[in-house]
Each structure stands twice: as C-alpha cells, then as structure tokens.
Length: 372
Image 1 (tube, rainbow, N blue to C red):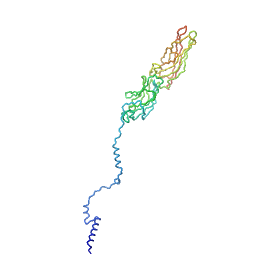
Image 2 (tube, rainbow, N blue to C red; image 1 turned 45 degrees about the horizontal axis):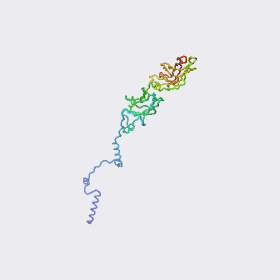
Image 3 (tube, helix red, strand yellow; image 1 turned 180 degrees about the horizontal axis):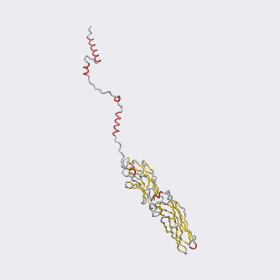
Image 4 (spheres, one colour; image 1 turned 135 degrees about the vertical axis):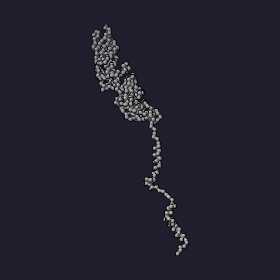
C-alpha cells in the first residue's frame, strides 16, 4: 500500500536530516572533500609552550629592561694633586693605620711625636669645602692622614718648632706646633714614595721618612733620644784653706746644682745654639762661694777653668761668686761617663796687703749619662 502524501514528506525530511547528521550525502565523499576549507596545522605544542604565562611575566620583563638601561653612578671627582688639608678638624675613616716606633723628635722647644699614619679612600666634600659629596685622590696618588702630638718644654724663650710636608720637590708648611694633638691630610704619590715630614727649629731640620715610617738618624739631634738627659746634683767641690795676711785662711766651694746634655743651647743660657755633628753640649749649673776665718778682706774677680778630658777647657772670669752660674762645655756626643776638672782662682783684697791672687787648686766630679 502506498503511504499517504503527508507521511511521504515526513519520511523525506527525516532522511535528509539523518544524512546531514552523519555527514554523508548522495554524492561521492571525495567530491565533498574538494569543496571543504583547507587548514594548515603546525607541530603539537610542548608542555611549557602550552602552559599559560604568569600574570606578572610582562611586568618582570619590564623591570629588567629598566635595570639594564640605568647608567651606574659616576665615580667621585678627583681632588687636587698634592692636596694638603691642615689642620684636619674631622675624623676621617682610614685603613692601614701604623704607629711608628721611630716617630719621636726632640727640639729646643719640646718633643714631637708622629703618633700614627693611615690611608683614606675618600674625603667628604664638606671637609674640602667642595660641592661634591666626596672626592678621591688624584691619579697616581693616595690620601694619607697623619696624627701628631707636641709636648712643649719649660723654656718659653726657645725658638718655635715647625712641621713641613715635603713631596715631589715641593715643601708645604703644616704648621707651627703648639701643645696638644693635631692631624692633617695629604695627597701623596702611591706608597708615599719620596715623601717625608720635616721637623724644623732654629735653622736645623730633622726628617721623618713616610714610606719607611721612621725618623732618619741625625748626628746632631740624636742626643735628644738618649735615656738620660738631665740630672740634679748635690756634689760640693771644696777648696782650701789658702793662707792670707795676718793668719787669715781662705776657703772656697763650688756647689753643683744640675747637669744636662743637649744638642742645643737656648738663648737664655748662651749663644752657642746647635752643636756640631758628633758633639753635644754639657750644661752645668753651680754656685761659687768664698770665705775666710778673719774679716778685713773682699773678693774681686774669680777665674774658673772647666776641663773635660780630650776637649778644650772653658774659662770663666768675672764676679762669679754669690750667685747661680752656668757653664757650657762642648763634648763628644758618644760620651756616657766623664770627669770634669774645675780649677779655682780668685783676686782678694786684704787690709794692709792690697790685692793678691789666691790659687785654690783643682777639684773634680764624675758624671754618668747612659745612652740606653
């Protein structure tokens, strides 16, 4: 039996739908593939490529790009070659600080000591009075910081002590030294090659070699470094009796007060100033007195002759008695123990006899000045 027309249309529609769902049609499948769009595919992505990028990956990449494009800060500018800052009023960080064993100097004015020498990498700009935050040494140079102390002597009439910096053929004044501590900064050739400090007083100079960190030996001022320089004395040189007129007997005494050795005689003591190389001054303080058993006399001029073996004697003449006196004798600087002979003569005026010279003879004393 032939189905009704409506049923036939329903079957036809259902069949077409089935063909669409299955991808099959009445034509040859090969003809359908010729009309399909063409898609080209690459190789399968790896696991890392397939993984989603972190949310801040682009931000990190941007930061790295900024960091690599920022220019490094410029180095500090160089200070002036041969710079000297004195006095240094601010402590500056330093390295390689040394405390010299041979940094003590004696001068007529007192004692100088190079306490320490160190290096500094930079100097703050405000210390130099510059506009930059810091400065580095000039090419081929280093910053050196030196600490110095000065202890003045008791004699305020001695010439002052001055400290100089010498480098590359030039000399700069660090300053005239006063009691206390001082510091200064200097820009010197690397290793302080050829540089030194000069301690000057009344025309004589002593040198501290900066590369070796030691005082340069000096045949004049080495005396200052001896262990014993001064000693109080209680020796009394007694003379007489020496006969006079009318049974009168004269006596004399030289009371020793002190003895010291020095390479320099200050102006208040004498005019000798610096000793010659290899010698030193022996300075003796004393008091001369005369006496007699009877009155009717007066003393006039006296003559004292001071002799140390091997050196020229020193003769003093005049009204030497009744006051403190000083004598200066030049002796070899290597002497540690020596004998001083003192010859004593005096002019006396006696009633009924006029003026006569009394020879009191010679007395001696021994002095010891160990060097070590």
